[in-house]
Amino acid sequence: MVKRAIDVAASAAGLVVTAPLQLAVAVIVRQVHGSPVLFRQKRPGKDGEIFELVKFRSMRNPKTGQETDEERLSQLGRFLRATSLDELPSLWNVLKGDMSLVGPRPLLVDYLPRYTPEQARRHEVRPGVTGLAQVSGRNAVSWEDKFKRDVEYVDNRSLALDLQILRKTVTSVLRREGISADGHATTTVFMGTPTEEQRHG
Image (cartoon, rainbow, N blue to C red; front, side, top):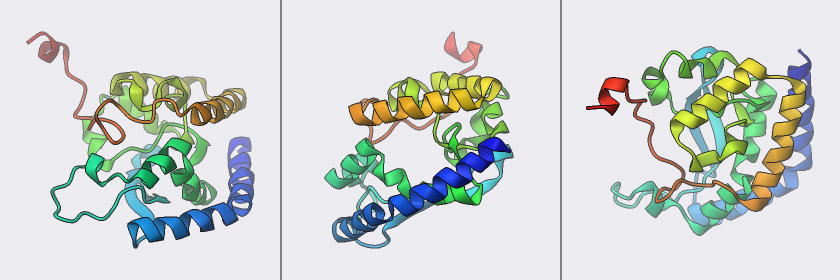
């Protein structure tokens, strides 16, 4: 209850304080990327319940339908992601209760059947704007390592840990660490964790 109260107060204050900045970003995104300004996508939240995530768009509209994400990602988009300005509209998701300020990042719905039972435990809590995996390497570490951090957060969550993650998030954003995996706009597609048999042929 305390965590939710903090989420509501902080996200409401954040939306008010960043309103001028979000307006400015929206105008620039509209000029560079066209409409729509916001990126909307279904994501699984707590207990796998689906909600609509909102962020600022960081990619241009496809021209031929065959461009990769790397080709569609604009210089503006790279800047928005590096500074996490694209995440500001997600404060609305926090205010509504879809997300928390801190928790495992909400990933694609397509990934739900690909998790191991242990990895799926990341959905025992609300997803977060930032999380333990994000301050432990972000997109520069493997999926398996990210999910270990997510489950570690689920097992050890506390207000003290949340404050520590938020502090580290600020440092990580300022240093622009782990923004993307090598050769990818963000990270690789998660296809599932190989079993021991698959690892050893």
